[in-house]
Image (cartoon, rainbow, N blue to C red; front, side, top):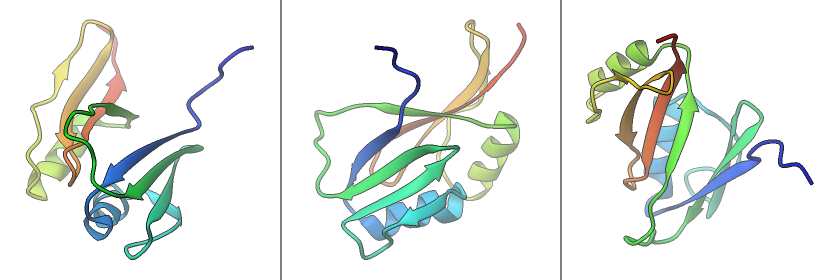
Amino acid sequence: MNIKRISGVTLGVKDMKKSVDFYANVLGLRMLYGGSDASFSSFDVGGTFLNLEAGEPSAEDWGRIIFHVDSVDKLFDYMKNKGFKVNEPRNAYWGERFFHASDPDGHELSFAQPITI
């Protein structure tokens, strides 16, 4: 048995409308089904699914979704200009430039691009 890739990630969300707005309108992900009034919504992220499920996320749970992007610095500027609190981009020893942000429910998101160090 070989695991090839992650098929999808599902996040519990408190407010589907805010979360759908964030992922669709701020990050520009294409919604496959669901929506602001649905209990379950799904987005396409380059052939992988990002799913949102209505319900109270547990404060004890933690995770991170890592998105590869074309330009970390351009996305950082865009999100900062939209009023989101984002950490300054930095270069990592493993060969990526990245920054972290949080979605409306506090899930940690990492935006990264490969670099040569």
